[in-house]
Image (tube, rainbow, N blue to C red; front, side, top):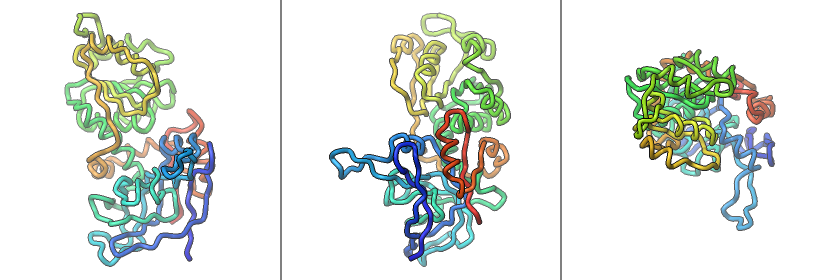
Length: 346
């Protein structure tokens, strides 16, 4: 039996690298050799939990999860019935298309493994082919950039809009890139970490605000002009807010600064907190939730390819699979890393 190494949860705050059986593709499947895989906030959440509650256990026992849902890899085997894919093709993956469960999120397979089985492989549905001009570690950003793209799509931001993105992590910075690529007039990124704000400017944000040191209201008014809410109270002229941070303080800041008919897109997982419904009413603030990527997973791929050098700036750490424990230590330490990508030998 051929085996491979795979990363799974190993208890609270820990991973384990285990030897598991290497998958064998069926007639409709392909086998990928993984060449790069990103670590996501969802992976960190699973580690904080120590696994995932098993449905079969009424007592709520935790079971290990095979981790990794941001892969880029190379086809090394293809089933006889597979069309449109050949050995040697470089691909990115739709982790939500796996019939045995979402890859890396409770499904049978995890992408932080030496090999990954793509069941019922179909170009444009489960995988997309990428050219060899794009480094695998940049290609692995396809999945999180689809999350960012969906948030921007949900915002309906247009060329004349003035937009603020809270949170300069990968999702927030990805949103800033997509906003500028679609020609949005002015994009501000807000965070509390200076290095992240520098990165925001490097990827194309028009301005940044350090909310730990600056008055957000005054700075937004300076950047976006003065407007008003439904009662005529002064507010910055910001049209769209995107929350990629998930902190209650962000929601409160948006409500306090929303002009009449402003929009707030909530893409970050929200922490518990009170909502000022009266403040929302006074601005007739539209709250839009953004979850995953219903149609964006491969919508983003051509532009990721075209602008891969710009997206490459989002990666702060490239860590070899042999040192994957260090990769997760970085991801688990607040402020230590922006985007960690695990790389695999050819």
